[in-house]
Length: 224
Image (cartoon, rainbow, N blue to C red; front, top):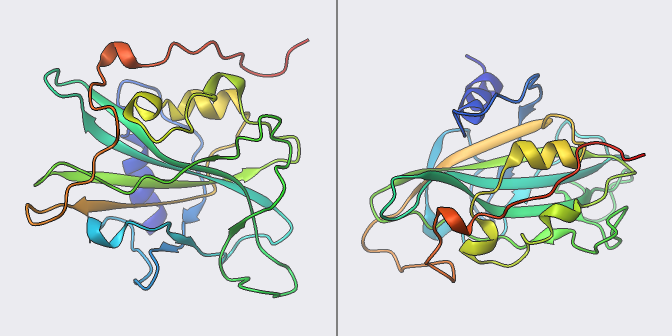
């Protein structure tokens, strides 16, 4: 099985009750944490190595294009309920790199402008992995092509705060539909290892429940 098929199979199982994102296409997303090795899909990484923003490589990408990244933890279980949900760990749009090799052209960097993002909300800041002690959560990173007409969806304007209330219940399929995104062009994921000796890192607002999920009023596709 190829690296892409292996990663894609795991992505398809993020939320089993929902229909899969079809067609999936693309390749392994080249990524690593600063001063670490490039991540092979399905690797297990000590969460102490994941506190800083990962670097996203540009191998195989078009320097004339713009990209956005979404990172998810699909293995969260709400305390006391047994209900599985997804937490958004990172959303960043307007990634680019230089065609002429100026600067660090081997790594994607967020642009200074906000492209077509009318909300000026081109990021939901990165939250490092923080699985419970002894658990084995997946952390999935999806790279999308960003069209020139892309705009951040109104109905997802609640996601920037780094809190459980803002990030729990993130629906990647609905986000893709309302944002009119094609399937991801590259994907990577790893398992976060958290042992009892690690310092605890918790998101603010630990009282999230099933009723905390946002009821979104998203319009799918262009309006007349």
